[in-house]
Amino acid sequence: MEPLCSNFDLLKSSRPTSIPLFSNRLSCLNRGIVKKLSVSLPCASYNHGPNQHQAVKTEAPLPQSNGPDLIKSITKGFVGFAAAATALASVCSDSPAFAGSLTVAFPVSRTEEVNTVQRTLVEAWGLIRETFVDPTYNHQDWDLKLQQTMVEMFPLKSADAAYGKIRGMLSTLGDPFTRIVSPKVVLSCVDGSPAARAGIQEGDELIEINGQRLDGVDSEAAALRLRGQAGTTVTVKLHFGKDSGSGSSIKEVKLPREYIRLSPISSTVIPHRTLDGRLTKTGYVKLSTFSQSAATDMKNTIHDMESQGVHSYILDLRNNPGGLVKAGLDVAQIWLEGNETLVNTIDRDGQLSPINMVNGHAVTHDPLIVLVNEGSASASEILAGALHDNGRAILVGHKTFGKGKIQSVTELHDGSALFVTVAKYLSPALHDIDQVGIMPDVQCTTDMLTSPKGTLMEKSSVSSLEADSCIMVAEHELDIQESKGTAS
Image (cartoon, rainbow, N blue to C red; front, side, top):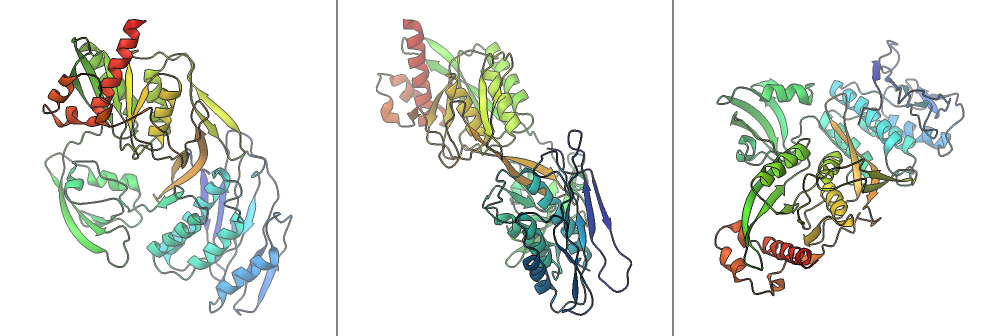
């Protein structure tokens, strides 16, 4: 998703009698014409005396804004402080409900790193104001929430504490998936990578790379410092712990640089003897996450297996937490044909929109079983629902996680990442998935293997994969499909 605005200028007043003005103007040209509407919240400028304030003239206040209460809430935040300032945040959109400008007032921190986070706060607030799936913002005045959070952030002395205020503001939306990740926090480590082996985990905070501080360094610049020739080492200093505050420890770690394969696909061919005694090949494909390369890697894997004479497939989505929704849709089109509906989305206005294939051509029409469990979420559920509801696959396993919301991810000016829930989705058959999950057609229990297939049990000692009860049930279901096909 493109950032909300292309321009974001920080201006500071030179007037000696007040705290510098924090004037942010977000100017947008979203898909063409932007309608302008003069809509302003009450603003206040404050002089040196804590009891001396003068309200700026208000024009067409927003319906949910209460001018006196808003000014009182800001005034409370200034007791004990010398002065304050006004700010201008102009948010624009091509949606009629949000097309216009919004004038807000808040104090500017004299602490530079907090001042930077204040700018991030306005940027995040504007994105949520334009795109968050719930237009009531969990039944609260979102414009007032910005004012309150700015006042709370004003006396802080560290960026970490300031980011905490942004997280607190986002938590009032009642959506755990709408969140901000500060630029220095580790999102995840690739399994088996040097970082993972060193014990670096999600939530740890990078402080230095090769002795160079990361203050003011964006994520791409930090990544460039981490990269280098295979065989060399890079030294990183981190705050270990989900919370870099109390209880966390600072450690320095030397990491060897290695070639890291980022493909989310692992696969193998499983020899399989059918009910009538024929030896066939089943292609097993494990998809661990929906990355940008997922669909391409999946297509290449299937082509390779087809060349090896595979006649059926098991797609394993167990413990796949999701990833890029587009990647999930692209993977679905590898297995489906025609103009099938892949998923239905519901936007913030309640508009139901199907996402359909256009002249799709499946890579293979061989029988397909999809494995799911309670760890299969988000894009995994979109893919499983698309394949199941269109009659392409049988689902085997356990009920899925139940995350039927879609997030956009935007990198903000300071390198932090903002995740915003922008839509809900339903399966092609209009089944609600959020907090419900998808129930598989068949549970993974070996008791279901009632047919006299001793070969299945004999194979269980060959590898842990073939001993997996869900794999065994999947093979059994493939046999049933094949027998039905032969009978017809």
